[in-house]
Length: 392
Ligand SMILES: *Cc1c(COP(=O)(O)O)cnc(C)c1O
Image 1 (cartoon, rainbow, N blue to C red):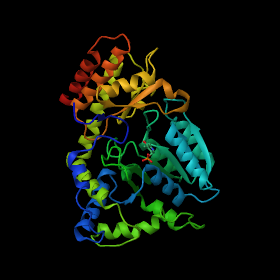
Image 2 (cartoon, rainbow, N blue to C red):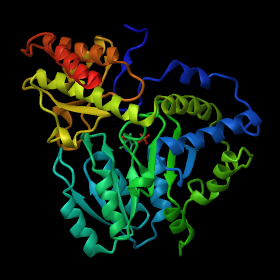
Image 3 (cartoon, rainbow, N blue to C red):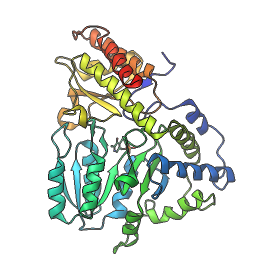
């Protein structure tokens, strides 16, 4: 085992040593030429990661919630009708944020483990005259994956902006912003981007920027105003200095290292690797005869797995046992079933060995707690499933 416990939660994740090392270099001035280049490079690479050559990237100190907050603040004016697809905890959060800015929010709430029915979304969009459609790509509380291309197409068809909370998806799940017509995709550094917590990142289409510019009412937010940051992002991408508020210099250095690793791996390879890891982990849970929260493999995310406990196993016994084996995993998050399931994150630069070590720690904890299963069956199933995917 490593000197630290393996962090297999849906963010923060395990960080690459080179990414961590980049943070510990003495902080330069934000006007330093080398830093301006680093910032500019990171913005450029964001276009590759979000697959949005025509969008406008932003990198600002904050967490994922901050990126959600400013997306709502910039796009919503009091009284605007917006449609929110609610698949779990972070969708609820987006609803609260939208209401804070005075939006008239209509929700389509899916049963636990399910994603919205496209026909129902279309019927609602048809009658509602909505300014924007908001949804999570992956809801981290349920492990459910939304069908982004179909939803973005519907939003476009009915003249609504498409805003995607990609905090648990960007840089791991397939996302083709420009091709699919997504107007805003946002994330935080500590999830699949693989950088310590502290940065909010978002990409905005020209159409959404124009909606911000055309606001009729003033924006009741200063630090999060897209138009305050826009000249700073444009300047740095052109390798020039501009200032609005001090950037998180060390984190941006670290981000640039991680984005280099991601773009060197290539987005297609990265999606495929996350699918393979997810397939292997889910196969292990199935071999242990455990059910998952998502109602089918098709609607399940590839960045995490949400697994129901077997009868008689308590979260308060299980999670510390797994930690004793050197692996940190998460409990449940959806209020009605919070104590009935656990979550394992498998995103970023984890190795297959990390994944197998996690399955093994879970098996050991179950066996210590008296859950009957054939020892090693989860590990064997993960091996088989991973080989199927990687040698095909
Ligand atoms: C983690 C997460 C958030 C919140 O991000 P913070 O960085 O904790 O503010 C929002 N949405 C989703 C889908 C997430 O996974």
